[in-house]
Image 1 (cartoon, rainbow, N blue to C red):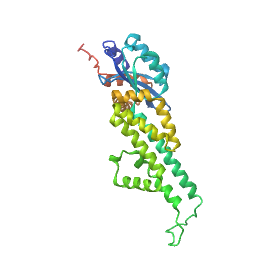
Image 2: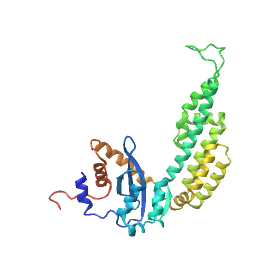
Image 3: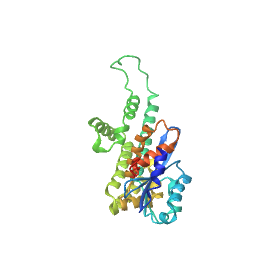
Image 4: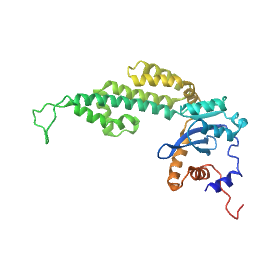
Length: 295
């Protein structure tokens, strides 16, 4: 497989007319084995992949690209990883770096889940002070155990909080209504997550104004994880604004990563990533190998 790609690579120019790229990493094996992958937003093709996910790995891509072509890159989409931002700033400083909206909203989802765990732990603390029930159905005059009941219901609330409102089942909608009634702070965290998701649905100048309002709201919300998130977003504001202005996201590269995951199953028996990379480049790079006798 690696030989077929090596022969094919000699006949093509992977980096021709490269202007807008997406950079991401994907786990291809257990024990923290990663590939760094680069796609061309305009052609929709995978153009480069290599083992590792650090500055040294990404510099290898720009070494292969060359300084002249790196200078022609106009936009780079990526998550907020410092190792990507640092190399992009070093090798193509004129390029506009766009933070991936999906990853930014994922920060809010992580903050929301941290707040859910805080509420769950509070309920468990209360539950430890409550009387234990014996086996079987409790007697009618048995004291209620609100802590146990609350902890149980919060443990099952994760997906109701994570999902977009339009995707909620009837049961999950009822769960969300229960949270709104019984835990205003957790429900406020949910609304903050949804508010940030809305920012990226409007885009452009309207999106940036919506983000200003969201940051102001998060700073005043009195939920520590969201106050911290507001600061994180401010630190990455330039790249987030660029994503809102240019509409560039990691949708293409996430799709590419999904296809690479399928290929990892095909390449399960390979002993090194070179065969997987060759298979990915042949399948997703837009270049077909010359078949024997048809050159």
